[in-house]
Length: 222
Image 1 (spheres, helix red, strand yellow):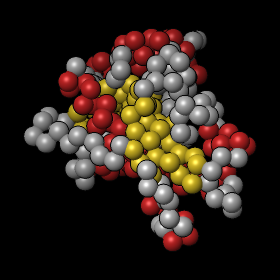
Image 2 (cartoon, helix red, strand yellow):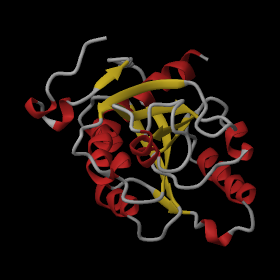
Image 3 (tube, one colour):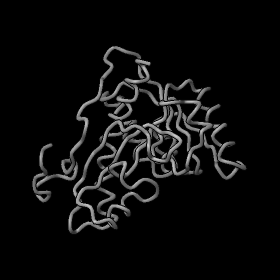
């Protein structure tokens, strides 16, 4: 594995090692039809939409579902003309009921798979079993290290020299599904939570589209 060069001599986007370094393009095939779930600002959703627009990946977003009214992801979808729906988790009496509605919406949208792009809710077997190996997530750590909440904070507290992010398949064990792609980011002596989070998020935007295509390769072969 190649070594990092001096971070001060690199742009933020270059301060990472990504593995694997490429993903299938599916040239000439029909676009992968995906659903996306987001709760917040929606920058990872936007990264997917931009990769599609620029034809770096062969996919289309059939439906975005948000759970927070007026969140950034909703506004980004509106600007891009991407279909979106609100499923407010506060309106459901259980996570299972929420996920059952998600299954119905995504099945109606005829998606091949689903991307959790900053969905700040733990999903249940209701959703995972309805889309087995067809649900992917982006997590801000080098899994299997620092699963669960605040992967960046966990990394800083542990004093590691490398942090990063992971795109993985979702299973019923939290952040424990098969890994699709990872980006490793050096932790600098000057880093705090905000600065490290921003550099990791840049890499999330790079690897999420590739992770989707790697997952889609499994879907199409299956």
